[in-house]
Length: 191
Length: 148
Image (tube, rainbow over all chains, first blue to last red; front, side):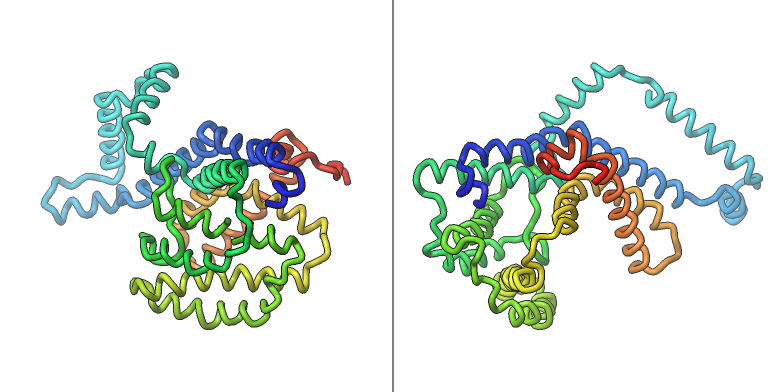
């Protein structure tokens, strides 16, 4: 609002495009893939830590009535199974960059994530862009916030809280389509 | 509310004039009550927004009272906070995956992850972001030189 009143609508739009929209557009090729890679790495680490050490597995085998094996045998067996699974599932084969991109494009189009889980923690930037668009439309139509009746916004803010899914605080919406209660909450809290 | 208040009262708004009452009231009374009534819609719908408004108004008052003068350090931290918001998640996730194996109390893990993340991101902002095109994109042209 400060930028709008001091520098005008065009400057506000240019500034929000640079500060919010471009980082949002760049996120799917920068931070979001990095976040996905870190999640994959973290899951692999956790799974590896959760697997019983080979020495324990070798000891437990006797209790289960299985043939006794050394820890080295168990470890070698695990590696052989991993190789076998990788070979049969085709994990080791690389489909090529173009094929991977096309496959990801179509899986994204078919995925409910497009609506509900695409933006990750960049959801707030998306809401900023949406609110700037709404503010621009309102100002152009002469319906921008005047502040005259602003105290009604405090009780009005309670209404969307009856619809929040999270137990404390406002929900976050990770998809492109904002849910109605957040579409009401965000402008009321800001406008 | 924010935009309307600015339109009516500008930056000199007296909105935070009762901050020294509203802030402790929000922290000591409203917040614990809101926590204790989670899952009970009438309380949720009133106490949680009341806490949010109380904290906002109270903090406006605190900053009006004690931090009204512009500060280059605070401005730098405010600029850096946007980069930290954008880039924190991968770092937090990988640190959590390492911390979960440690036999430490949860508070200690939380603190270490927080401190390491903040330090790494502040250092990266200072030397890898602020005086690069990324810094210009996120925070605009910089008036202070890299050696300044």
